[in-house]
Length: 489
Ligand code: SF4
Image (tube, rainbow, N blue to C red; front, side, top):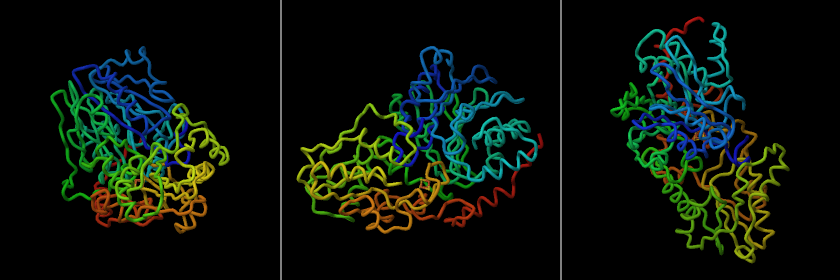
């Protein structure tokens, strides 16, 4: 199964971990349903069945297709982790479904991963040359094996995790189980989100804070960059990054706010809903237009459109009705088939559109094929003018941190001006949010954000790409100079 909209960037994965005096299986399952938007290819839950053993149920498909009353009742436990997956590295096969579980001399260890390890190829080659064998094609197994390798030498999980992660670079959020112990781990720059919450009977970590709300709990706080937190039956233990939170660089993924996360989540202290509304307001200031009605592309453009209307004064209306029962997009790899899928999913409301100057609002444009179809659909429904406003600057460069935007030639904006893209999508005008406008809407400093896919400057070292923070490079080099010895298998 592929992503919901083939013309949008692929979602990253969602991770969750819970320790509770209650049975965690139903709560882990509910968490996966809540985070289903982050990955639709597979779902899995791993729970402790004793202090050293872990039991898992994993499968391809949506969470409600993988789990049922019978297999959930077999997962009764007080600690566990869960995962929904959208594959950005590794194939779409059962061996890659997470959480991955390794039966080892130090007991069972399970890992769920959101993000990508940038140096996984080189590291995997190095380990295979040393005789290591892998059962999956994911970078997650690489990290899992490195952690287990360290655990064999020491009875200190936090040191083992730190040692193993000295070898890897990238954006990641992990939930890890060592026997019955549950850990959350965020990458040193906080690229991928991870939050800590209090829920009835215990504590949880999750990719998005909305999980805690819906489990009748509350957000405690986001993980600091590089922080490891162990959940315990009494609460939690925090192990901050050796770089203190104040000193450490940050590089939160701007796309979580623009598109990926649910609007009812809070990431690094910012409400995703409010950020999107601010984006709409800034967009209206940057790209005003004389028009009669604003219509969002459902559901991704809704919140941005609210902000646009607040500032522009143009009335907001539904204008594109979504077929709610076609969420599971067919696998249609051909471009023509993709465009046909749009008319199955969206239908224009003639009574709203006919004879009007229309502004269409969406969160982002990646390939542009869907937007061209929407513009044509709205024009055919009688619009006299069609203007497009986009709540994200032009995407021009790949993502290396877990988002399915891998090559420059897939982006409609690569090497084009705004006017040229407007012509390609057949719009009367097109306005992208500026990078400064995005930073303003987020209310953060640009140095606290990853803007790699907009600027082609990345917060970590990527072969062949420019790096943004020299200090980060130095930190990584420092950490690597103290790299642990990898054992020959
Ligand atoms: S490159 Fe873009 S999508 Fe990838 S982590 Fe950075 S901001 Fe997010």
